[in-house]
Image (cartoon, rainbow over all chains, first blue to last red; front, side, top):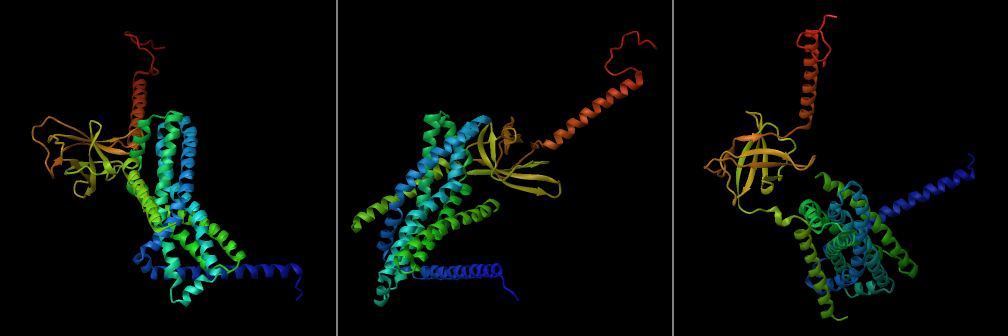
Length: 268
Length: 178
């Protein structure tokens, strides 16, 4: 059988795709194992809580600036865009409802997760990757200190604790930004803005669903960041590639999970 | 960065987050208006409740005085039994009217209570006897079409019996035969 060049290259491409798919599935399994090991070794993160507090500072508190400023601008843009369309139908009083529901249900958790993955996720990946590259993790293992209990688990719990707090702050500051654009600048009625919002925002459906989403996104983003750092090749290039992979994977997973969670929440 | 400073900043961070969540629940959501406090429950039977749902408001004079608790179907009388929880502060007389209205033109439906004049008041577990069903759009349209059709039928039968076209004024002396 004569194998032309075209057939050979097609076969080679397919083989490459298959190999990369298998490698991704292998990494997914390794990530799941790390997740279960993290949960198993979590006792120390709570017994020596100062470890977790230190990590909450570096993931949560240091992200406050970007979260608050982004929230402010997102809220202001929502109010502007919403007003522009609503006033054509004479419903400009609904601007409060629009800003609040958009932030609480979707933008709060999702945008916070994306920013968190970009800022805190990359920091975690780079830190753990460098620890692996400088053989600190191996040194810990030599001293019979579990690196997962000492390094990975506190960061995991810090991420899970910080994400809902950051998402709530994002929604709150966003609504404030929307209010500042809608009422003093555009001139929507102050009482109508808040009363319409209070009548239409349901604590169970909107706020608690937003909190659930942010917790799930926190688990996903932190776990992805931790795994990429733990699994990075111990070279400078490997660590930098791992940080980009963290951001890309976290963003895709967050958006996919958002769709799954929203469809689940809207039907139940 | 020593431990006490880190602890302080993390404490402020968590406190801010909890305050934001509480503020969202109280100010932005309707947590405070959800629970009314002590209530007593009363039932009412409707032939058609439209799209009334549990937790729909019960209003009197436009003010929310209670919530719809439960909606059940009575298999014997084929009516919908709606149980409503009314705030304990408000007492309604026994001949209160319970109607189902729609908020706005196509909005959600709620129960409106109109007080009658009876001196005896409704107690926990009582039944409201005067009820009015929800307005179902399809029934209104079919009624309108039926009325329109019977109008044109009446006109057609009238013109047949007198031999005159519809709408022409008839003189007292009668129409000319040609």
